[in-house]
Image (cartoon, rainbow, N blue to C red; front, side, top):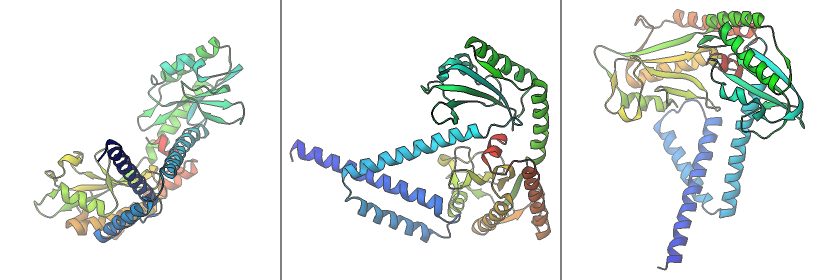
Length: 362
């Protein structure tokens, strides 16, 4: 075989591998977006593997230019999605949840004019966002330090509250002084909210978030002194469509990759891929983060369905924090409390599971 023939065979094999990977990626995205939340048996997984193989064989006839075009489209779609998410964060800015200072420039400038801000963006203990008003579309978009776009105005916002608590009055003043110093340096006019009023907003919002920030836990424990092997837990979780994520918990994810609920080890030791084969525990817990999921009442019902499926598969009991079996009355009480949290959030203008809720309860 000549060196040219060997090179061509190598290139051909590489194209097949890339085609297979792209086909697998498409199948995975399709299943996450349109598939059911639960996988009922190993037979379903086998059927999906067969379908992926058939898709691979049919796509192997595609030419290299067609593959390149497809990959370019995927990259473009991913970039567009990321940009849209960044720009959405500008639309979420609200004077009741963010200390927003607006800068009006005499002449349009790039984000680099805010040089002092980029160096201290992480000094305030809460997220800082910089949004710029574009000249052409007249829309607010997320500005980044190295960006070359020229903006006529900037909105620089400090988030007032997250799960770490509220921003302090001292941090608010420090943030204001920094931004006003930058504005003076670049000779920009400013619109600045009252500092005392912003601190009052922070106190009120923090108290509200603390009131509705609730987590629902359902415990699964074996009978007697029996422990649960990590491998069996992983297998049972996978059958319910849950995947082990970097935080050491199994999660059921929605099409956008957000967690609907999670499965953790009761002793707080994280699950890890490399130790599942030798790991065991006295119990596991399903957790529903109420403010961070859409329609939390229905998500609770879905979590209970998974709880009973796991209980059957692992031969464990579904109990409360006192190791008492959950009754219908107990479940009804939990649903009532979840509905109360949802109603309070909506009355406050925050929809559970929305982008605004995700950033306030992070």
